[in-house]
Image 1 (tube, one colour):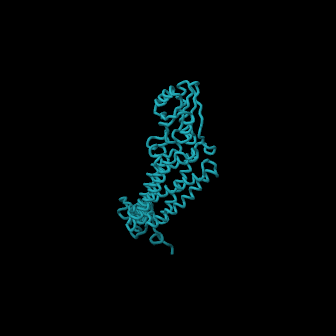
Image 2 (tube, rainbow, N blue to C red):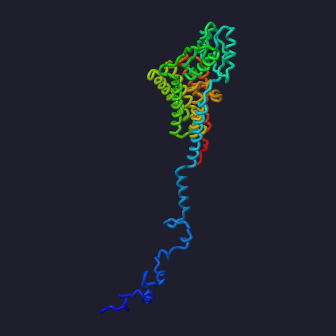
Image 3 (cartoon, rainbow, N blue to C red):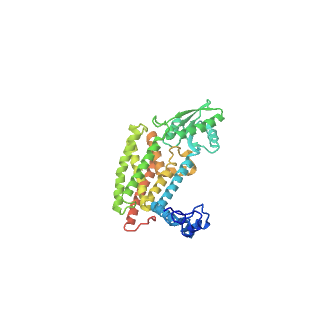
Length: 406
């Protein structure tokens, strides 16, 4: 049989009956109704809110669910306790930057203790002239009978220099001690040189306590003390972290202090040997440096244990604040006390780092003179911090502690 146009097998594009029988229309049949009935199902089945632009993900969940999940992830990764500790570290960091830059960015000589050696008729005028210098860089009122007395007073660390005036000539002599700090000796030389030049005189410099060849800037004693301090608070921090920041009882506190004492003896000896015989940086007696190191390490460690007993883990930060942030810039290491601003000059001798630096320099360059006060300072810190650590342990026994929120 030959198919005809009335059979379903040969539809005619212009036959409107085809549209009534539900056959799909193409672009050539010209029936607009077919176009509406032939739209894809995705357009016919979309929910109404899709056209209104409501947010939805591919799973049909609103976006705020994902935002809430992200916040939960942050809370799980960084607890409130961790956030508070990080904030404390930030404060400590900024304090560190402020302290070092504040202490060192503009060193100015202020009332450097010195003596003037000259005949009576000349000395009074010279002292008045030096005392009247702008900014009060010198304190020239310290007396010395003669050159030998001036040398003796420098060796005892009573003064940092002396000007010996020769009334019969135009060249005077300035006695300095670079072992007490090269920057201080240079500052004294600069100030006196300008003052002498204004009087049409010249000055010859004599170093009566020169720094060792292996300690050209006189900083080895300061770095040695810093190393001892770091060892002290790190040892105490490890002892605390290994079994909880606060000692549970008095016995545990005693054991920690005993371990710290052994560590201090070993650390003091190691530092003295490295600075002395091994690197040949400091010329002082090894035994004296050893004793200083042991006392300093124990004092700083006991301070850290006491702070931990009071404040828990935060106590480590408090110890660093005291020993490093406040102690290092004020120690008189890079710039001795007469070159520091008032605040740092005032607190330096009372802190472990400052007392340790002064004592180490005295042992190395001044025959161990003028160490009674700084050793009393270190002993006071060691005894006081030990008493606090033991007292807090006894008081806290059986009592709940306050903790930072999780």
